[in-house]
Image (tube, rainbow, N blue to C red; front, side, top):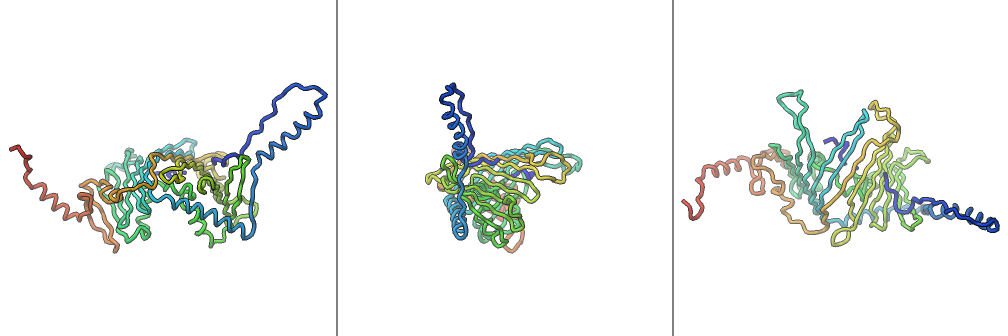
Length: 392
């Protein structure tokens, strides 16, 4: 899969944008002209005050206290989502150097309970002809099945003769190899939108770059309709005072401090803008992202020989979630090896904690050493067929 097309303009938060409407023309006498003129002169001032957003930016210790409060509230909202099952449809459109477009779509089903995870991710892959290196291959729709539980990480791509499993002592202790498998076998975590930048949470990003002397600030924005938003901005230490911040998160307190908009300005000049729509779902009425849109606008020079104008859209992505169930019980078997439905003929290459790789198969929902499984299969094949009761 083209990873540049895998995971996500900006929908400005409610009421900040207004449209001025010209007063309707009407006939009047010259006698009332001075009064009418005064009224007309006041209309732009009144409209301007109604359209302008009111901002509040505390200083000193109060600034830091508010910043910590807003980030913490966003993290607490994420913690309310303990279990979830959902499906999402992903669509991406990438502008190519020659001006053409490359469109892709994929879908994914997810089961998650705490840190346990299982997913089925459908995507088009190119199957190469090994007997003919010049053959461009053919496209096939395949499913990447991924499992992460307390004992292991396992992955199998349908129609492949091999699957992979990696033992671990806990999900928090997975290896870099496991992380690579997870990255290849799944789409981005949709909960990184609404609670982060698509790659990491707001709280994790804040904690990670704090030691690098980034400058963080928060500002309260109150629109003309009374809607309140908190805008969190982050600047690198090498950025000029008047330069726009590298990161800008807009959080909605009326949506449990979920992120509704995110802007990333790269040093190359490329700008990524995310827009997140959320709804209250589940028995606990928890706010959860249901639609995510991303637009990437072109930097000054990508070095690809393309002379399109600066700021032109080069990538669009959209994720639409459906069939969502939040904080409802999920049976343990949903996170077992058997849930991957690995074919009996598939060999599972299992890496132990010591790094040793051995061959296994899946039988009756469990991992069995290959030689034992083959022995059982051979015995079963030599057993005479049992006759149904009442038949010869």
